[in-house]
Amino acid sequence: MSHLKPLKGRLLIAEPSILNDSSFNRAIILITEFTAINSVGFILNRPLNYTINDLLPDITCDFNIYQGGPVEQDNLYFVHKIPDLIPESIKIDEGIYWGGTFEVLKHLLNEGLIAKDEIRFFLGYSGWEKDQLTNEINTNSWFISENDFDNIFSKENDSLWRNKLIQKGGNYKLWANAPSDINLN
Image 1 (cartoon, rainbow, N blue to C red):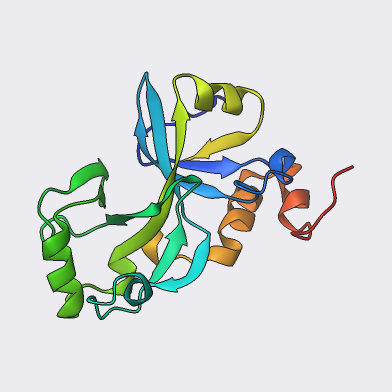
Image 2 (image 1 turned 180 degrees about the horizontal axis):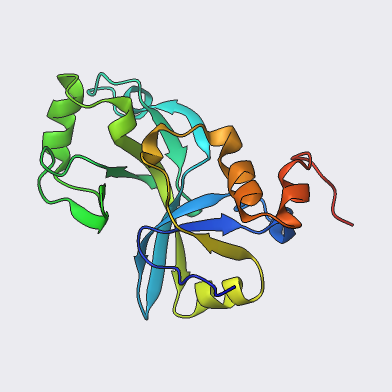
C-alpha cells in the first residue's frame, strides 16, 4: 500500500507506538501547511475546558476551545468553513480555511451568525521543522489519512482517533479498543 503524503488538508493520525508521548497521544491533526521548510497543523480531538467567552470576555460565545498543539499555546487560532463571511481567510483544502480578519469574526460571533459546526478554535499549534515530520512518519510515529469527513467541525472527539484506526484495519483494530491509560513497558 502506498503511503499518502502529508499534504494540506489531510489528517495526521498518531500511531499507537507514540501512546507514551503526552503531547500527541491519540492525536488527530489537521495539516494546514506542508512545505519544504516546515509543517503546521492543529490537533482536532483535544477539547479544553474553556470557551471563547472565558478567554475573550468581550465575545459572547460559548464555543469550545481545543488544544491545537504544544507551540505558542498563548495564541488563539481558528479554522473554519465560512470564507465568504470572514475576509482574509487562507484556503487549506476544499471547504476548510484558516484564519481571517478577527474583528469581523468577533462581530459575527457576538451576533450569533456562526454555527458551532462551522468553526473550531485552538490554543497553540503543532509545528515541525524541515524534514522533521517526514522523519517522524518514516519512523512510524504517524500515518496519514485523507480527510474524509463531510464536516470536520462536527465530529465527536472521543471516537475520532479510534475510528481512524478501525478504518485503517489490520493490527490497528486491536489498538483502537485499547484503554487510554495503557502502560507501555
